[in-house]
Image (cartoon, rainbow, N blue to C red; front, side, top):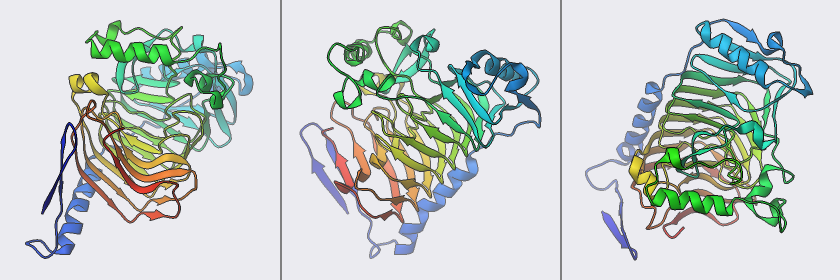
Length: 389
């Protein structure tokens, strides 16, 4: 049976399958999940040679005061030149600026190792090619960044601290509850300009932001990368989104603890990416725990690459705007999403499952399968579908 729902500017068709027709209930329930497991079998988890490059050998000092940016860069470059391996962050607190990951490099944080990122915006220049809220531009480097690389990883049992707070990055949002007050800089004019440039088809390379525009960087953004692994790490207090794979293929996100209650502190946002597995992660976030995206408005339609083949399993969502969310930047579409065996419960978790878009944004959403969720408490709805976002 099909239910046709008409809204002001678009049409929604929802298809219902009943066991009493040509399908048995077990067939209806089993078939999509067999496809989910096929997706998991397609995902390549990167392998790294047993070579080890300790950042201390390149001058890093884990005293929480010494700038270790160059030492970490040298260790990554040496690892890359030698065919790949593990860049080791041992016990201590290592202060750093942005990190660029190269192919075949596994950034490994041992127990009691902390990477603490600088809050000095000048450290994140020169600008790099990035997406910001679903729109391509030249902006501050993400705290950890990779472009066009293959076989990269962040693993171990240490912590990555974005060091954001109301005293630095978060106030750029322009909200008083995030540390902003009258006369302080904020992102509003820069954000408006970026979206206008995208609607006017200004080439992304000419959308130059960074200094003076206050568009906060994400914590980890691999861009056009293949075979990405993030495992075992605790992520804390990102300036904006935590983990944002863009135009990536074969991404494994597992065994993470992600905690940050700042503005736009989304936990994991796969964007225009294919074959993504998010498993056994804990989210306590200031925005959506997981939000699947594919570009915003005209820019998303220009690129027109969906997020597809996303499998979410065994995760726990505490605070956040939504547990598993699709949107709102989904102009390129989203398909083949499977979420199962997750626990969501907090008076500060607003919705368990949410789909959000609008008639300007558009996007085709198809093949979304959810089962075995344990929802204890949410403040608004277990399921919310919002086409007027």
